[in-house]
Amino acid sequence: MPQTTLSLSTRGQGLYEFTDEAADFVARNGVETGLLTVFVRHTSCSLIIQENADPDVKRDLLAFFKRLVPPSIDPSMAWISHRQEGPDDMPAHIKSALTQVSIGIPVAAGRLLLGTWQGIYLFEHRDQPHRREIALHLGA
Image (cartoon, rainbow, N blue to C red):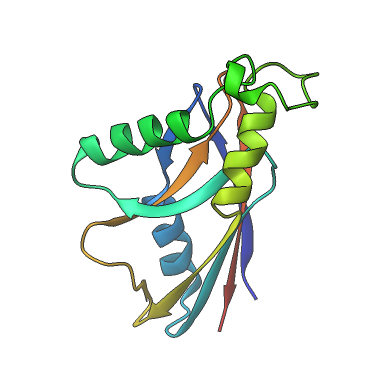
């Protein structure tokens, strides 16, 4: 079973697309029919499949999650006790829990079965740059 780890550098909160890297991994390994499992090895970022055509989608998603889970210095977040790593840390864990850290994508005819406008994204929830690892596993 083919497996690899991607390393992505982030520049703070945002969506970082890696669809091409995942598609290249599938193409290089010659699996015609199977399942690509994508797993992020961190607890303060997540994975999503989302539209990759209109950049407004990414901006709106970021704005929504900032409103849904503001930094821990916001008065509405006074109940948070985990604050050792800054005001974005516990909110990042919450955002990660609301999304997902693993995604399964079907493979047919040697290609990912993503829709026309779908892309695979690392959803970074921390303010500072990070180096994130994403495991790809291709099962036949």
